[in-house]
Image (cartoon, rainbow, N blue to C red; front, side, top):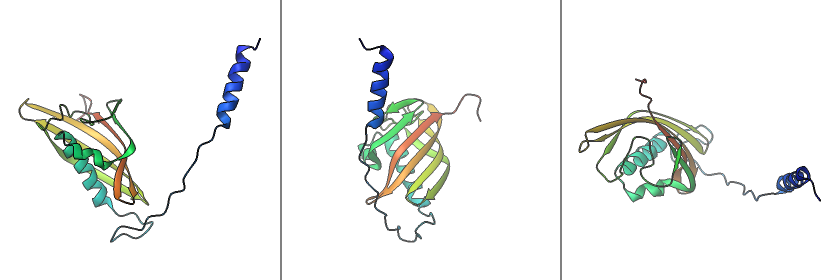
Length: 159
């Protein structure tokens, strides 16, 4: 009879030997007005993030096209698969709107990260919710896409 620790050791050894196929990424040509390796493109990623928040708040399905197929969106510690994706935004039925109060974007090569502070306003419900989000974007052949987003509501004691 095999001892339990031998079974676990065997499983761990087999798992460590597993491999996966890695496709090398092709270098992309810089967007117009950019110099390769210098960054640039902050306006484009900020526009992408603004569109993602605006379309999500309106419940617009076009928001789905802004993400990669394997993008991960986390809202208040929960993975979100559809609208509303972002903390504080509810119902996604077109009854609310988002305003961005602050944004900061950094682009390094074909990756970018954007930090935003936003407010979702729903006049019908007389609600205003504040949130913060971090977006990680990747420049692909078709343009910038969101690969990860994480949003949280402000804590009650934060300004």
